[in-house]
Amino acid sequence: MTLHVALVRADGEARLRNLFVLAGLLLWLVYTRIFWAAQATHVTLPFCPFLAVTHHPCPFCGGTRSFAYMWEGHVARAAALYPLGPLLFFATLAAIPVLLIALLLDRDLAVRAPDRLKHGVLAAGLGVLGISWALKLTVLPN
Image 1: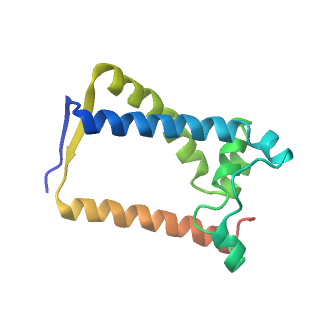
Image 2: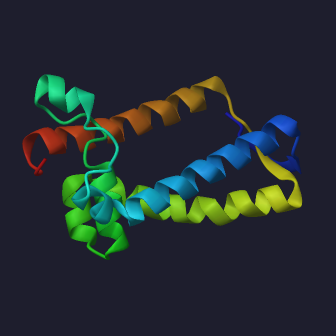
Protein backbone atom coordinates (compact mmCIF):
# COMPACT_ATOMS: atom_id res chain seq x y z
CA MET A 1 0.00 0.00 0.00
CA THR A 2 1.86 3.06 -1.26
CA LEU A 3 0.83 6.68 -0.91
CA HIS A 4 2.23 9.11 -3.48
CA VAL A 5 2.15 12.83 -2.70
CA ALA A 6 3.62 15.43 -5.04
CA LEU A 7 3.56 19.18 -5.50
CA VAL A 8 2.69 19.78 -9.16
CA ARG A 9 1.86 22.68 -11.44
CA ALA A 10 -1.84 23.47 -11.07
CA ASP A 11 -4.08 23.01 -14.08
CA GLY A 12 -7.16 25.14 -14.72
CA GLU A 13 -9.47 22.83 -12.80
CA ALA A 14 -7.19 22.80 -9.73
CA ARG A 15 -6.85 26.59 -9.75
CA LEU A 16 -10.61 27.03 -9.96
CA ARG A 17 -11.21 24.43 -7.22
CA ASN A 18 -8.65 26.07 -4.92
CA LEU A 19 -10.14 29.50 -5.56
CA PHE A 20 -13.69 28.36 -4.76
CA VAL A 21 -12.60 26.43 -1.66
CA LEU A 22 -10.62 29.46 -0.45
CA ALA A 23 -13.58 31.79 -1.08
CA GLY A 24 -15.96 29.39 0.67
CA LEU A 25 -13.74 29.07 3.73
CA LEU A 26 -13.25 32.83 3.95
CA LEU A 27 -17.01 33.46 3.67
CA TRP A 28 -17.68 30.80 6.31
CA LEU A 29 -15.17 32.40 8.70
CA VAL A 30 -16.66 35.86 8.16
CA TYR A 31 -20.18 34.50 8.72
CA THR A 32 -19.21 32.69 11.92
CA ARG A 33 -17.28 35.75 13.14
CA ILE A 34 -20.42 37.92 12.92
CA PHE A 35 -22.85 35.11 13.82
CA TRP A 36 -23.94 36.44 17.23
CA ALA A 37 -24.74 39.89 15.81
CA ALA A 38 -26.49 38.31 12.83
CA GLN A 39 -28.52 36.06 15.12
CA ALA A 40 -29.61 39.03 17.22
CA THR A 41 -30.99 40.71 14.09
CA HIS A 42 -32.49 37.45 12.72
CA VAL A 43 -30.38 37.35 9.54
CA THR A 44 -28.71 33.95 9.98
CA LEU A 45 -28.86 30.96 7.67
CA PRO A 46 -32.04 28.84 7.88
CA PHE A 47 -32.65 26.44 10.73
CA CYS A 48 -31.47 22.82 10.30
CA PRO A 49 -34.21 20.92 8.40
CA PHE A 50 -33.17 17.58 9.94
CA LEU A 51 -33.64 19.02 13.44
CA ALA A 52 -36.97 20.59 12.45
CA VAL A 53 -38.34 17.29 11.12
CA THR A 54 -36.89 14.76 13.60
CA HIS A 55 -36.39 16.95 16.70
CA HIS A 56 -32.90 15.47 16.93
CA PRO A 57 -29.67 17.21 15.92
CA CYS A 58 -28.04 16.22 12.64
CA PRO A 59 -24.34 15.24 12.58
CA PHE A 60 -23.44 18.87 11.84
CA CYS A 61 -25.79 20.70 14.23
CA GLY A 62 -23.90 23.15 16.41
CA GLY A 63 -21.10 23.70 13.92
CA THR A 64 -21.88 27.34 13.28
CA ARG A 65 -22.25 28.19 16.96
CA SER A 66 -19.11 26.16 17.69
CA PHE A 67 -17.09 28.31 15.28
CA ALA A 68 -18.69 31.47 16.72
CA TYR A 69 -17.59 30.43 20.21
CA MET A 70 -14.11 29.64 18.91
CA TRP A 71 -13.82 33.24 17.69
CA GLU A 72 -14.46 34.29 21.29
CA GLY A 73 -11.93 31.83 22.67
CA HIS A 74 -14.49 29.56 24.36
CA VAL A 75 -13.06 26.18 23.33
CA ALA A 76 -15.03 24.17 25.91
CA ARG A 77 -18.35 25.73 24.85
CA ALA A 78 -17.46 25.17 21.21
CA ALA A 79 -16.65 21.49 21.84
CA ALA A 80 -19.84 21.02 23.86
CA LEU A 81 -21.93 22.25 20.92
CA TYR A 82 -20.03 20.34 18.25
CA PRO A 83 -17.17 18.06 19.35
CA LEU A 84 -15.34 18.41 16.04
CA GLY A 85 -15.78 22.20 15.97
CA PRO A 86 -12.47 23.29 17.50
CA LEU A 87 -10.51 20.87 15.31
CA LEU A 88 -12.34 22.01 12.16
CA PHE A 89 -11.89 25.67 13.15
CA PHE A 90 -8.11 25.29 13.37
CA ALA A 91 -8.04 23.15 10.21
CA THR A 92 -9.92 25.93 8.40
CA LEU A 93 -7.47 28.55 9.67
CA ALA A 94 -4.56 26.37 8.50
CA ALA A 95 -6.10 25.64 5.09
CA ILE A 96 -6.54 29.29 4.11
CA PRO A 97 -2.84 30.25 3.86
CA VAL A 98 -2.07 26.90 2.18
CA LEU A 99 -4.71 27.55 -0.48
CA LEU A 100 -3.57 31.14 -0.91
CA ILE A 101 0.04 30.07 -1.40
CA ALA A 102 -1.05 27.34 -3.83
CA LEU A 103 -2.92 29.93 -5.89
CA LEU A 104 -0.07 32.46 -5.82
CA LEU A 105 2.56 29.87 -6.76
CA ASP A 106 0.30 28.09 -9.26
CA ARG A 107 0.80 24.76 -7.51
CA ASP A 108 -1.45 21.89 -6.44
CA LEU A 109 -1.03 18.90 -4.19
CA ALA A 110 -1.42 15.65 -6.10
CA VAL A 111 -2.25 12.67 -3.89
CA ARG A 112 -2.48 9.15 -5.27
CA ALA A 113 -3.55 6.45 -2.86
CA PRO A 114 -4.76 2.90 -3.25
CA ASP A 115 -8.51 2.39 -3.03
CA ARG A 116 -8.07 0.41 0.18
CA LEU A 117 -6.40 3.38 1.87
CA LYS A 118 -9.04 5.78 0.54
CA HIS A 119 -11.80 3.55 1.90
CA GLY A 120 -10.02 3.29 5.25
CA VAL A 121 -9.68 7.06 5.57
CA LEU A 122 -13.34 7.52 4.60
CA ALA A 123 -14.44 4.90 7.14
CA ALA A 124 -12.34 6.52 9.87
CA GLY A 125 -13.80 9.96 9.07
CA LEU A 126 -17.34 8.61 9.13
CA GLY A 127 -16.58 6.83 12.39
CA VAL A 128 -15.37 10.05 14.02
CA LEU A 129 -18.43 11.88 12.71
CA GLY A 130 -20.64 9.08 14.06
CA ILE A 131 -19.04 9.30 17.51
CA SER A 132 -19.49 13.07 17.49
CA TRP A 133 -23.15 12.64 16.53
CA ALA A 134 -23.68 9.98 19.21
CA LEU A 135 -22.27 12.37 21.81
CA LYS A 136 -24.67 15.07 20.62
CA LEU A 137 -27.63 12.69 20.83
CA THR A 138 -26.78 11.35 24.28
CA VAL A 139 -24.52 13.57 26.36
CA LEU A 140 -23.92 17.03 24.93
CA PRO A 141 -26.38 19.93 24.83
CA ASN A 142 -28.18 20.73 21.60
